[in-house]
Length: 163
Image (tube, rainbow, N blue to C red; front, side, top):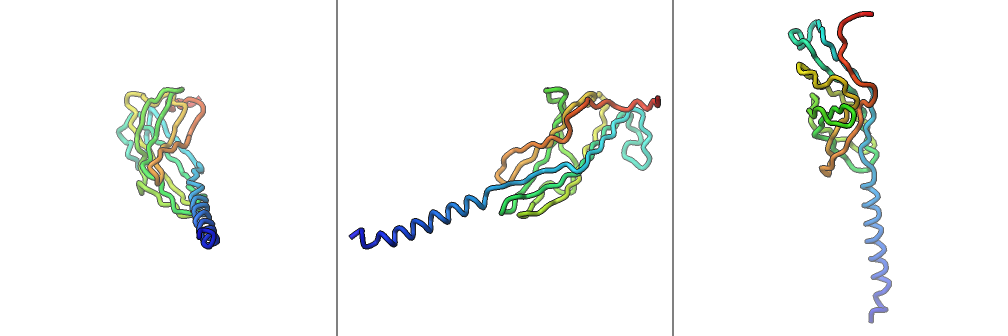
């Protein structure tokens, strides 16, 4: 009795397994971040014209441009951006950057350019000597991901003295 339907059962099992494999392959891939440009302004004696920092003694400004690429076959989302500042291995400050949008929808095989800015009036010198800046974000599946923006020599404010 079962031998009469073995061909039909095999065809259905083959179709279902093909559907499962194709759907799982479609979800492979994700969002990749590429740093295009990073800019620092950290000054003790500031005299910025046309700036928010007219009265501030120690402004810190971090600006960066990112390219976000979706190498998958389905649209992906990057949202809830935050910056973490480190001195050596210890976390000094965690804050959110300013941006036009809080979430970026990246279509398959598409590149999205993003510019974000972080401003801080560093009156208590918390950012003196930071060696690493990490950008954190969440994906479509609410997973936390990290991208290193800066890792190098300690950042110190410009004293305004010229050698």
